Image (tube, rainbow, N blue to C red; front, side, top):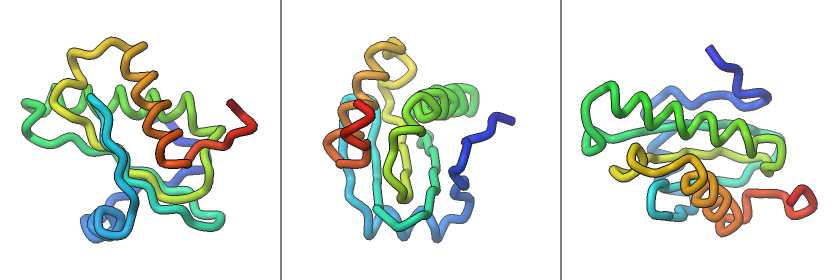
Length: 116
């Protein structure tokens, strides 16, 4: 299992629901980010709905999101993040996903400016 650094993973349904209700959401072509800022708390969750396809496709989408998250995790503010994969994620190239990922992090003000 890949370590997500200093980030705890969200597991419980009620944790996800709380962030969906209270957090800020930012959409891109392939990814949706729900972000709730917090002091000294680092949590992350990844989801893929059944609209994406069978379990193999959903797991691939979550693996791709996790890999992108690890690239940017060192430059993120503390808070809780939920990344939701959209249907088009498995057809997108890595470069396209990376630019989408960076775009939604900037729009949500979740990324530290001095690291960029």
